[in-house]
Image 1 (spheres, helix red, strand yellow):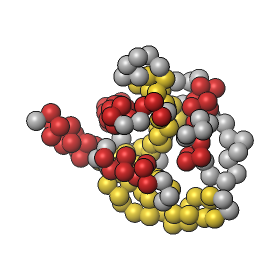
Image 2: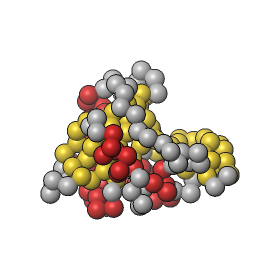
Image 3: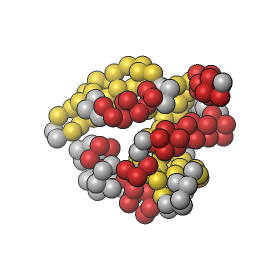
Length: 160
């Protein structure tokens, strides 16, 4: 599996608009949304071992030492490969950026995404109340995160 930055916004849009992904990642009003290629946004393309595209992560800084991630992995990548891709991304973030903390926000209805984040070592840290509009209703998002040191400890434990 490979992880690399992409500037191909057509490819990013096609991944995000996949019918198994789009309903879970967009809020009301985003029907015409298009990804933006910007120096401050890292679109990290996942390529599976067979050479096929596996999905994309979006990463951006929320401040000098905290980075936020968004996950859009194609169904063919779900399961063990998704866990591997998430670990590759966390490793990239903690090695290649000044990040000391990696966070994500998951709409409360998206239980699989929350379980995925927790399985990757993130901890639930709070609730961002009424912060995501879905079908005309403001819903909560669960805030999850992992520190660089926590990630390092998880890596060391998995190698033991």
